[in-house]
Length: 173
Image 1 (cartoon, rainbow, N blue to C red):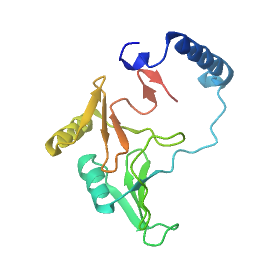
Image 2 (image 1 turned 90 degrees about the vertical axis):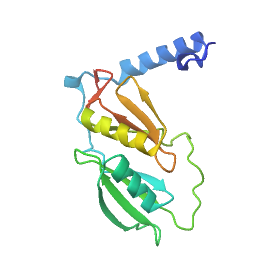
Image 3 (image 1 turned 60 degrees about the vertical axis):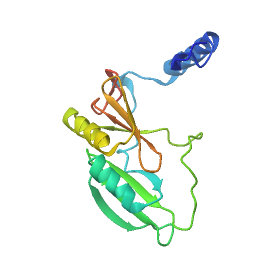
Image 4 (image 1 turned 135 degrees about the vertical axis):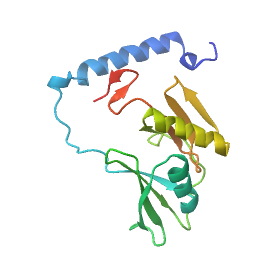
């Protein structure tokens, strides 16, 4: 096998997975006009854990460009701060710290967060890239539309120029 991402598995395993994906698509994917309506109204917020409130607020507001909208005590843990950022279109990215609890290092686990992808217009995308450069924050650009980086706690964040409801030119809604 070669070292590129598409060859981490054998060609036989890839074909088996393609066949399984095709079966799932056939069983569950409906055309837009035949798709049942969602029971949801949208994502209220996605919540992540942080080590330091000030560091997190500074990074998301001053590097990513998402204004903090509210900070209050977390209902589940005395002394914990729960706070929210406006990421556009009525969506919030929320955080809380866990005083007295060691959450350990960021880890990719089953059921865990892989990354958060946030759609940003091109002018903002280039501004984020410039601020990452100015601060010496590592990132990777993929396909000239995605910036992948890590927040101060290691969570993977993608800033993507694709509009909401679109990925690789495909409609996602």
